[in-house]
Image (tube, rainbow, N blue to C red):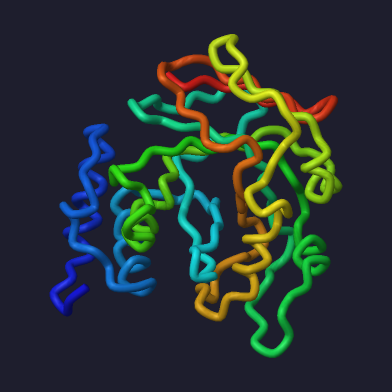
Length: 251
């Protein structure tokens, strides 16, 4: 917002609020003026948290700008993983993908959806946990929300699933229970309809880092269940289609 923007001060404030399980309104923060300042502060958050996982979430802002944020803590476990519970913690069932080859940015030849799918080696059933340090989340400042890691507070990567689910997710039954109570029971629903919509937009974003979308990177593609608040700790059980299942606990 001004030349005096201090990315480290913003990163420290957001991390402190998360560690204390607290929130403050947008008005209590110095706001990044744009994508560059937001990513500079987000990089500091990532470094100070000691994040080493090569796992990311993608989204697209209302103005069409694709964005990404690191996801952690990150657990790869078909079952038995544990993720910390905080007041206000929310849950989303998702499909994640792992890249089998690099997808470098191409200036003169945008990637097609088929090319992005081809670069994916494995698809997974996954679960994202979300916490906001900002009371209004992204309602006032999308750039502040970006620094706050797009609200990510953990991820559990579950079993591999056929890549065909990327195309058929909207036709697939999804049931989620928390502490034995059903919190979602319907067909899977992605906000954009197409599971790889945001990923395709990011693949063709000229502003993305040169080292993004490399072989081995895990990308989660967006909610299939909406964001459901978990009012207390408990076991999460996800069943996707006839065979895919992921169980873990928030504690």
